[in-house]
Structure formats: C-alpha cells, structure tokens
Image 1: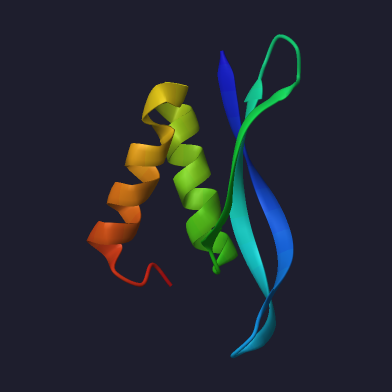
Image 2 (image 1 turned 90 degrees about the horizontal axis):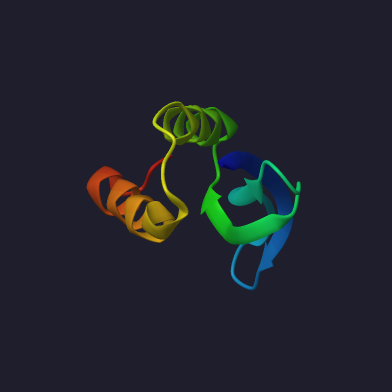
Length: 80
C-alpha cells in the first residue's frame, strides 16, 4: 500500500528569489521506502494538506498520481 506525504522544500527562482514549496512523496507502507516524488506542486500548505488527505483517503494508486496532480493544477489554475 502507498501512503502519500508532504515534502516541504526551499526553492529558488531567478525572477522572484527563494520560496517555500510543497511537494508529494509516495512511500511504500511495507518497506517505508520512497517510491515516487513530485517537487514544487503547491505553495500553500493548507492546499497541500487537503490534497494529501484526499488522495490517502481514496487510496490513490501510484500509477495515477501524476495524472491527478496535473488535473488538479489545470482545473484550479493557480492553486493558491
């Protein structure tokens, strides 16, 4: 089973300087190994938590993670 967690990152953009971003980490529950990581998805912590809670509640299959992230970002425009 996969469990999704938030990754907090401090990133740097040439035009705007450094900023906090939140990514998604997929962890295999049995081995506790990271099996997938998507960086810089959200800039708002509350949005990141809501997304992680939702995909964990629905036990999202790892094969759909990138598609779901893409759909959320496209449908929300600027998610923050």
